[in-house]
Length: 290
Ligand code: GUN
Image (cartoon, rainbow, N blue to C red; front, side, top):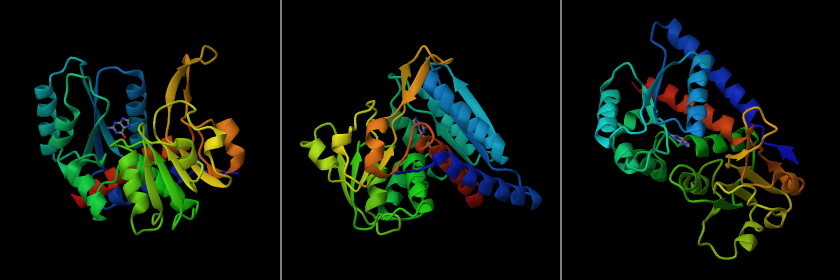
């Protein structure tokens, strides 16, 4: 078993980006600039956004954090998005999800200028992804593809099961893995809550990508000998032995699954850091396009 080490891979990517930023600055241009909109004070979202701000500083990007109250109206948030769309100093921005229930997330995503949608969530960007056209690819699936690329994981002709069909991870992941690219060219099945014979289906997967948000859902009996297993899950579970009061748990029962795998990611040094690195890559791309 070999770990797919997203932590070290993402460090490498951050160094590559930092070098490019140095060149940008040396040529007299301004640094790439990412803005993040955070609505409310959800602990996990606060954490994710804090990491995004820290990552920007580390590679030499400018970043702006826009905090909005939990009670912000949809109209106010839409106004903020119009401002960010029009702001020539900002190359790209994200609206951290999930949003409070009174806000229509689709309406918000639709309002983002596709050229600044560094999350790759807009219909135009998802459409481009489906057609294999240049686009901003959603950070988590893009980070996983980058891991496969950097570890030379063979995907062509492989049986790939994607567990979860979210707009952010499962759906774009399945599209990417099925396209005529390397990595890619896999035979992909999207499995979800209504899938029958899930154990049988997963246990036939050469590549199993798990993004369902259910702690330790994938057990050893669901994993084929020699499979590549990617765990996107990261759920906070109360843990009084930790200073923070919680620990992050993945969707895969890592301890009991790992010895069956040829490659496996671990929480939190696998997919998480790669997702963060992908957002930086997209922001750099947005800067280059402008
Ligand atoms: N919430 C969980 N993951 C993400 C992400 O990649 N982008 C945004 N905007 N919100 C998220």
